[in-house]
Every structure is written in structure tokens, then in C-alpha cells.
Amino acid sequence: MTDSKLIDFDWKFEFVVGSSAISVTKLPVVNILIHMSEEMSLKESYIAKTSSLNFEMNLSELSHFINTIEDILQ
Image (cartoon, rainbow, N blue to C red; front, side, top):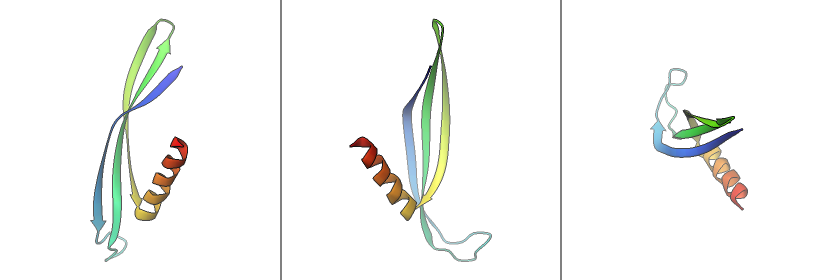
């Protein structure tokens, strides 16, 4: 059996003004870094492993993400 738990998260807001594909974009984005702990029970012992997930969202994706989390919590 494996239990995953949120340990911590970090976020930052950035304003992308250009990229290698487009000279000027001017897009706001949010970077989110999630740290999780996974505990696995094997017979009478536990193994703990931590992992991180880093992803980027634009404002529309962030709004959808927040709405989804709110729906889950209700």
C-alpha cells in the first residue's frame, strides 16, 4: 500500500516577454513546484520516498486548476 502526502509547494508568477519560437509573447505564467512524500508499507517496515513535480500554467489553466481543486474539496 502506498500513501502520498503533500509536504510543501512553492509558486512564482512570471511574465514571459519572448521565447525562441516567438520574438514577443507578453504572457503571464505561474510556475508551481510540489514536493510529495510517498510511504510504502512492506510487511512490517515502511519505505519513504520524496519526489517533486514542477509545472507551468497560463492564467486560464490556473483558473481551471483552482476551480477543480475547489470542486474536490466540496
